[in-house]
Image (cartoon, rainbow, N blue to C red; front, side, top):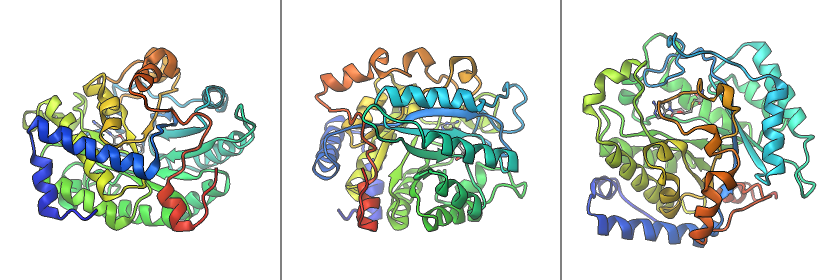
Length: 358
Ligand code: SAH
């Protein structure tokens, strides 16, 4: 579907509930027609909150001395991954703060090899996504060879000026380098996912329209985006008076999901935890606006409190088993099938490479 920049800006500014319901319903139909009715699950393991970066919005930024730092052991990560396998999730995401030291790089390679040996109930293996920040191309290549199939690296904002406002100018944070990392991931053969935060201070509808056009231009396979949520131990907290109220930030996120679904009918789009944080039904709403992936959080309860990218994240008890979290029931009530025991790879990627697996 071709939606021009001006049209996108206007739709992103739309506030009429009735018009928005129609927009979401249209996007939902585009989803069902193109990627089917299923929602796919990815068990999320937050492997470590140790980070070399200092992003001005993020609660696990290097200079936040009040965050207790942790790194899960290989055994702990594998325990969570086995839980995902047993539960029929079929895919996992390993996410963490950014580290580029060789001990970390080899640990990830080792984990990937171990994970490739874990069997799902149907005898198959797990699909693995990494979300571990910017790395050298040879590291992306090593991890791809060790078994990672997908990589999530949010551009955070595709407008250089806004990107530079929300990252320190310390030589370590570079818009160009982040963009280049996305191209490197593509070259290494990953299903490439990116995304942005929605409702940032200084951000307007035009920035978000440009983000949508950027996703299309980059021809991404997957997208994870969600509302920005302020964290009191970060520099960006000082600008909280500029924020839209939380319900409006969630609504803006739903509009982003719906419009992206219409622009890119066959990609995977996540209903993210940040949406759930702003509204207990946020993920379900995102699914009804065109998202087709959810990421139940499998991180162990003892450390979960320390992976506070933003404040107010839901607790572990609520989520690891989607049965107890209510998500499974909610999807059932909505008559939305869950793609248990299926990887749910990006169809868009499959088509580009003319070979779909699983
Ligand atoms: N180190 C990895 C993972 C970062 S955490 C990386 O660089 O990709 C995953 C995402 O959380 C980030 O990409 C960012 O978009 C989001 N995030 C960070 N702080 C946030 C906040 N305060 N509110 C909402 N989302 C936030």
